[in-house]
Length: 116
Image (cartoon, rainbow, N blue to C red):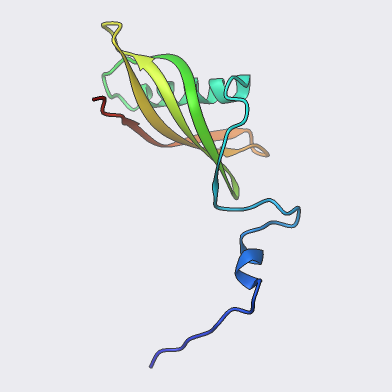
């Protein structure tokens, strides 16, 4: 037996907005990519990736672009430029979960991007 419940008009939209009208779950561009908070988060992502004993010894250069997503806290999806021990720079995509009220960041994902 299956059950089916239809949402009232506007109900779904309400599920994706908090009490202040901020949309939850959608990725939005980071307006000021040069913000020191964003750049430091990128540096954290590189350091955390290296701390996982990857052996890459990456050196953070900068966050080039990114998006943020309101969740219980904030997810940041960052395009990071970093160089390896030979000085060759590459791009990486990192997702960092931010809980500002706890002053904590957690690296969720860190992957190299393929270049053509």
